Length: 132
Image 1: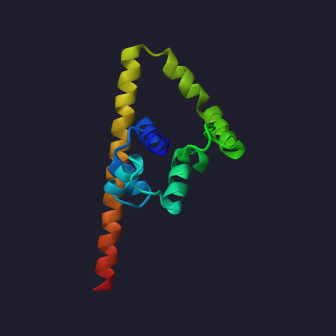
Image 2: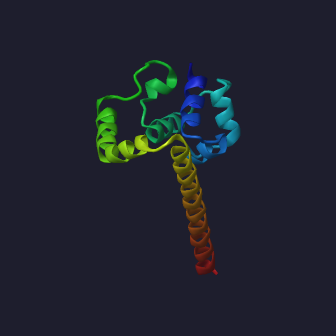
């Protein structure tokens, strides 16, 4: 069902509804309604979600259980090949070190998001100053 697919994809990325809303340029309330099937998914939002999660729109809509078409699977395979050595190294770590690495990765993601938000605010401020 659609609501389960959107929620499943979002949670697989440890995303909040607010974060997904930002990605697809809508509100947290709209994402909640989409997840609870109380709201038809706008085409633009559906396409953005499919692109972001690297799945087909049919998968999100529950029409198909196949997550990726041939091109999507090919891109995923290329990415997996590129990161294969990282996966092997991760698998060799103890469980506690794997958990530590996941925590470090989450912190890096947070820091990157904060940096991007700061940069966006600076761009807005510079644009505002240039209009004065």
